[in-house]
Image 1 (cartoon, one colour):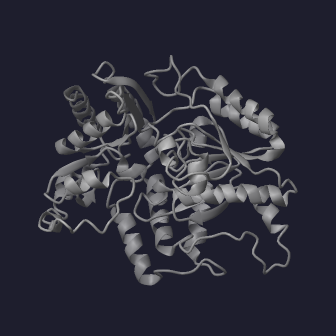
Image 2 (cartoon, helix red, strand yellow; image 1 turned 90 degrees about the vertical axis):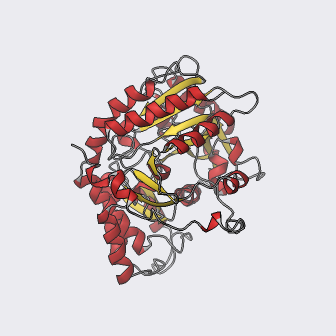
Image 3 (cartoon, one colour; image 1 turned 180 degrees about the horizontal axis):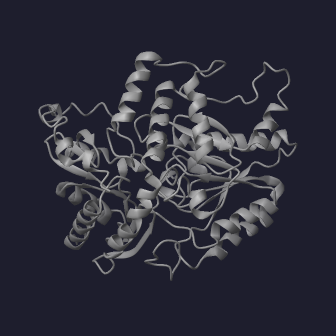
Length: 460
């Protein structure tokens, strides 16, 4: 089966290849846009402009084809410019471009919510829509605190995240997140503690789940002893950490976290913004690892990246706690929401994307490709500078030895040189991260990994 036949580089090259490049004529054209999570000074000296995309490829403003080795930003696993999603968005924007979901509704919001319930673990029966994964994190944290207050346990306010965890960039997200660079500039935020990450000596170059390290989950018992469970609202972790470099949980680790949370009346939140809807070789990371949370955050792959959207899923008991304590029926049960919660165009994109995920049996596709991807990426063991390789499903992270006191320098150099060669990969801290589209081929993977190995060996 070659699902990428309809999304070839040739097709991509026909879209936007002759797009004008005003930045090349006007040096100040780019000044107005303060780019997010970007070295603005470097980019504006060396612009890298994408003007179109189709299938597994971007097209740059000078007509070059770039293989998308990260599925956009972990969000376009179905491939770019899928006709079914494009048509759904076009139909919806001409029919109902916007409708408030404060006190009013539209049918697609309910349809998409039901699809999400069908594809996520049993017991997560209610869906609260947000505009992004970052908004989903702050929503889940607020919900967790509010839930305990309604339960008469208002002292349960503290959160526990994990080192190297990523939960978005809003204040709640950087508080429970464990990436220092994302928080050091902004000062004190909400109270949170952090479990150790699971990158431990002896697990280097593990294929899939590492065999050792489940005992690290018992650090949660120490934090409970320190703060007492009566003061802890929730633990929030990613089934596998994406943005920190694809850190895979050891065998038994997530099960132990689940058991400790249950025994101590602490909510467990899974952040599945990256691991959800195919990337893990299952509809969710929870399903892939066999552990169900009390709350689940999702985003990215919901719409295949075609529209911004996120969501928080909770169970009926959680939902009913709010319904049963709200006073008169017309009163708000939760004073929280966003203008773009369940935006009708985003809902249309989400319905189309999830329909494609199921219809094209992308879970099977990921599981068919994953062994070849694993063999390919681990073939780089022994290349210059590589100190570790990790993988699960269609996600992989490679750690590079620091360049002196600059751990991010080599990954940056690799990513820039890969772009010159026609491949987009993500660099973050001391890692290179890969997440090819679900529709990719073994040949695409081979080309990506060969170019990556060549590039890593080229740099100092």
